[in-house]
Amino acid sequence: MSRSVLQPSQQKLAEKLTILNDRGVGMLTRLYNIKKVAMNVYELSSAAGLPCEIDPALVVALSSQKSENISPEEEYKIACLLMVFVAVSLPTLASNVMSQYSPAIEGHCNNIHCLAKAINQIAAALFTIHKGSIEDRLKEFLALASSSLLKIGQETDKTTTRNRESVYLLLDMIVQESPFLTMDLLESCFPYVLLRNAYHAVYKQSVTSSA
Image (tube, rainbow, N blue to C red; front, side):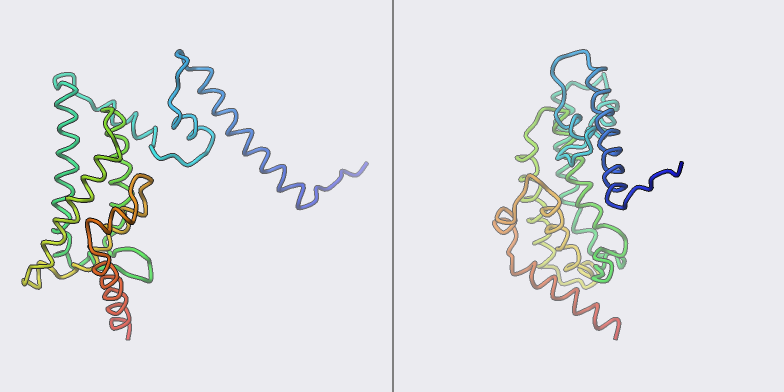
């Protein structure tokens, strides 16, 4: 007896059902192994294959690095200081010749565009662990980063400001990657005209370089 051949539509449906079943098993396994009634909603979402504002795996990884010799209050202060350090360090990227934004790859030549996702994910994980307000801390970060980058607009040293416009674009990327920040908030910290001019400058430079 000849076996029936699945139609393409039936095959796609079967593949989707298999994927859903695998995700369902993963979520049920986590539910089965949990000892308390309450479970982190982000961990459940991740097990089900849904996008999360907070990466539960990163939360677990950072939680395992906590020191027993430091109080929770001190660890919270350290987390806040880390965000401050990153914010005030962003202008230093402008002097790097490889910090140039390339429209062709929609990113920076030295991959600093990856900082946008990293900053958001690390901040979300840290302030989940320390039970702080992720949104408030990211708002503070954006304000401080904007202020720091605005200062290099006053610099006259061409070496220091070599890729100033390309680094300006990081602010836009950070907001685009964040579920906690908005463009209205960015505009209140950093003039939109500077972002628009920055995009114009990097695209013009790209055309000139390729000509």
